[in-house]
Amino acid sequence: MAEDHVDQETGIETTGHSWDGIQELNNPLPRWWLWTLYITIIWGIGYTIAYPAWPMIKGTTTGVVGWSTRGQVAQDIAAHQDQNADLVKALLAADMSNLPENTDLNRYAIARGGSVFTAQCSQCHGSGAAGAIGYPNLLDNDWLWGGTMEQITHTVRHGIRNDTDGEARWSEMPAFGGILSSEEIKATVEYLTSLLATEFDQALADDGVALFADNCASCHGDNAKGDRELGAPNLADAIWLYGRDRETLTHTIKNARFGVMPAWGQRLSDEDVRAVSAYVHALGGGE
Image 1 (tube, helix red, strand yellow):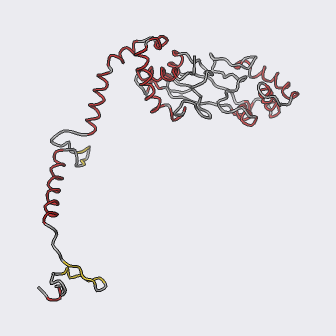
Image 2 (tube, one colour; image 1 turned 135 degrees about the vertical axis):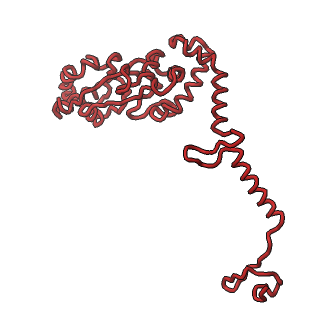
Image 3 (cartoon, helix red, strand yellow; image 1 turned 90 degrees about the vertical axis):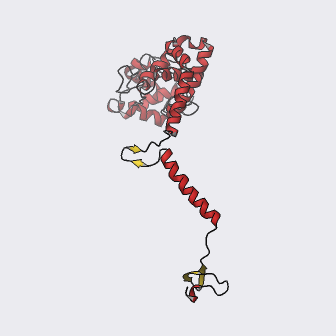
């Protein structure tokens, strides 16, 4: 061994490298550390043989044990489904209008429906189902097509104004920007404002009465309280999907609105459709 590769102070061999005059001693690793490393390598090789590990062209190696977290989840789901099979069967056979009278089944449906709502519906209607601008509040009683259990179930299953389900709820307001003049729209807005507000232009609102009767009453009714069969909202209450200030009303009349809800019957199982309908109905809105 060359003398210049031995540290003069300790007599220990160095690595031969020097950084700013500082040399690194070539101390051997502790035996226990080396054995731990070797055991870890052996264990790792054994693990990749026993369990899914190596990526292949169309998947991964399955491992000789045949266990995976995905398989374990599938087993847990299957066990859960077996456990609740009788309740699911009863839910599918139940008359939705009488479901609240069956306490145990209704409790199961609401619990299951709450999970479905959180996963599928809360993104639009909010975690508490209070809605947002353009997304209906499910906690009140102002439901365009009715809020009975059967009506809610139909809406959930078929959706609203979508082009994928022939039984979807459907209504369409024309864009009056190409039908009425700006002054006529302004007068109609003032009439709608007068239905709830205390401060408005009486003369302008009076002009809007005739315009409303000629253009809007066929759907919203002569008293502006809407028509559930047509999906026309009540314009005489304080519940407005997009807002009722003059600027928003002008935009709505001029350009119309056309919200779409998916047909969840095409995405969820029938028991999940029934369960989430029961959950929504139990929130206190509807009827």
